[in-house]
Length: 135
Length: 308
Image 1 (cartoon, each protein chain N blue to C red):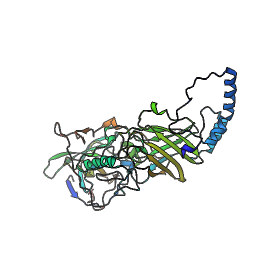
Image 2 (cartoon, rainbow over the protein chains, first blue to last red):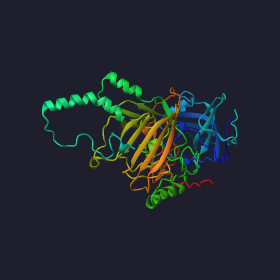
Image 3 (tube, chains in turn brown, orange):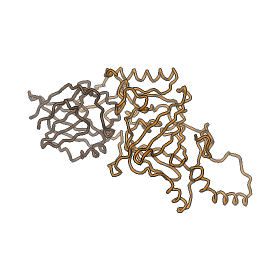
Image 4 (spheres, helix red, strand yellow):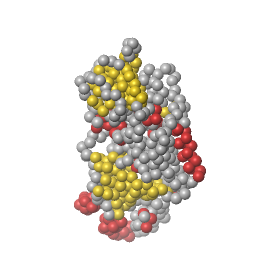
């Protein structure tokens, strides 16, 4: 089921564990207290430096389309996390959990991606209180 | 430290003293013979090794050096001084995060202005524009993996991010004379071995590279002394003493550690300009999306730090 939902989550003193996914820019553009959950279809998976990008076309309950972009770490940091350039294909149905941009544009910081077969592509810890993606 | 050793002293000129030699050829030859005979033993005594040793002799020196091979990652997050960091525990400095270098009032005010600008929603970082991290930031404000390549004559430190590297000469050379020095991203590093400790003396670092993302500034006359050693087989410690004659009231002592990670960990390169979506425009780090309205510029995004 394609849906777009967002949840405001207080995550207290969550410490991001990964020097494996450090950005070349400040992460202050993302809201670490919120997690969005976006389900949709992969339209592009750019396995490039300095940040790998995943683009997902999502539909809301009224059928409106939104193209979401999710930033992650470098290709090598994804390799170290077991996420390869072949891990996502165009047309894959995915659910993405991300810290959203503070300015409201449809983009965020990739925390975890779940494919329709249940495969999880996790890069950063998802707050325990965030809703689990439905498969 | 390094000032009391037979190794080069900071500020001493590189190479000969500039006086013209009038030695006769036979005297020169005799001097060279004596020098080549004594070079290795003198070099080992003083913890430095000149280039040009024979293979067998070089192998002996190599065997005396510690094994820092493999991959390492910094421990404890990327604010430069973990001991004075407020708050503790952030992987990278967030707006409002700071540390306490021993700044004089003028430079504390400069740092405070950067911190305030960050809290006002301008979250820029010098590396966002794809410039190098610079020194001393590489040793505490830079993510891993990093690698140490120890050889008798010099030690390299290699980082995956930006394919950046340091060259630390342990061949007995000296710094350039002060009047010939110019600021560079990594500065000029000379070192020597004290047993298993590599003592490194670095000068000539640019002043437009803060210690880390919190923006802590330094001048271009920083003098950095590092003492690097293994504290256990998987932990390498860098004990740093930083002198800043313009910004500090006293030397800043910072200790950073790096943890050995599996040597077969995948490493590649990370080149910032390959697909830069975050240029700094109008003083703000942008985040360019394909469906942005034409001319969209991200303005300030104020952040309220959590109560400490």
